Length: 97
Image (cartoon, rainbow, N blue to C red; front, side, top):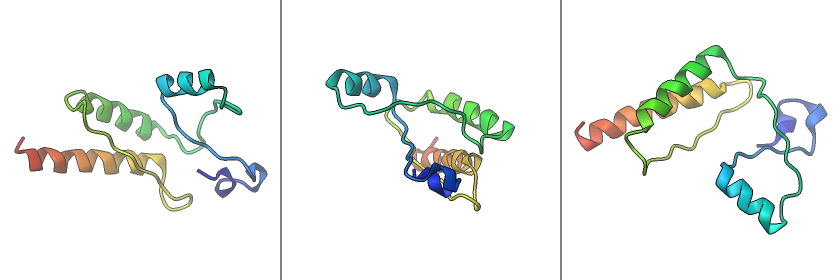
């Protein structure tokens, strides 16, 4: 994600998400240039609640992954989680659950 879309002060900075296992592998390979952790400016109370609900539902589906995003000014991270919840509901219908 190009962070300049959030603020011009962040020009040239990009954000990506990586799990702990892949991060350790990247560190061990010597290819990690920089790592910084920060809180996202668009996280809301609804996002935290919806993410918890989605993670609980996803425990039954170890082989299913949702990847999504949002557009600054049009949506928030919460809308990405809601989209994943709707996709999971459709998946359940498809599977006959």
